[in-house]
Amino acid sequence: MKRIVVLIAAISVCVALGGGGLGFVTHVQADTVNLTYSIFFPPTHSQGKAGQAWAEEVEKRTNGKVKITVFPGGTLTPADQCYDGVVKGISDIGMSCFAYTRGRFPVMEAVDLPLGYPNGQVATHVANDFYTALLPKELEDVKVLYLHAHGPGLLHTKKPVKVLEDLKGMKIRSTGLSGKITEALGGVPVAMPQGSTYEALQKGVVEGTFSPVEVLKGWRQAEVIKSTTDCYKVGYTTAMFVVMNMTKWNSLPEDVQSVIAEVSNEWIGVHGKAWDESDSEGYKYTQSLGNEIISLSDEEQKRWVEAVEPIINGYVATTNEKGLPGDEAVAKVKELIETYSQTYKR
Image 1: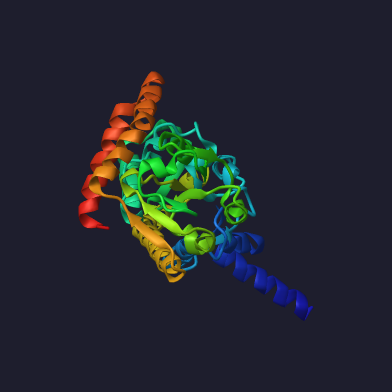
Image 2: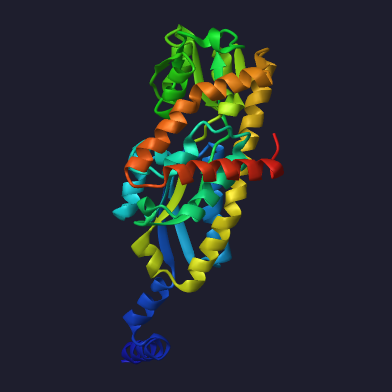
């Protein structure tokens, strides 16, 4: 009898607090917003760490109201399926590269063109401001939280390349856009992922690679090259997205949306800084191995810029033909590079 009385009393308390015993438990659980976050970078990469830190900061500023489970290394959705994974709700949030689904984001592709990025901070801020200025319809099916982009893709080779003629006929590891750059400069593009590049350079399958400097340490490629040609005037980047499923975003309380937006805005600089720090480590590492950094003269830089001009013109023409703002896109990227280069100098 006593047990029945105690049970009735307990149920009465639950009813008073939450509208019924089961209802109270449901109410408590519903207060926590659980999100999944798919990141293609491995957990040890500086950008993977930055993504994890973003998630932790959101949790902290919401006082635990938001819980984010991070799946690094493409373990939830592969890099080239990350965006679709967010759209379909496989993950709530995703980070990957626009270039992995080339052709799907024609306006955003302007950011990746070889327009002379000096560093990762500039590239990252350009990517975000470009998106805000043009608001491409190709991204309307997700909530864009923020973007980031690596420092200039440069030429790393087994033998020195000091002028365009030195590059003629050389087999260079390059994919997508960097493959077009290699071809425009007189080299022979050989497509392969970063994970295969070390062995390919070591065995002579390729004679060089187009990549940001961070790969020299991060992927240990400084061990199998001899020089880096600082051709930053044709430096390209790779823009990367951090996006959220639109339905999930719209379901969030306004206070949670505000926190996520605030942290995301701050993390633009976090990622830009991380890219530049990784490049700096790459430079230090390759020089510690006795490798050469070749600085092109202004006259030679101009020759390289002229060589890749058809790539930019081709992008403009193709994009305009689709009824999209190709001219405006390239003009905006150039304007933003010039503006941010005054703040974030090489």
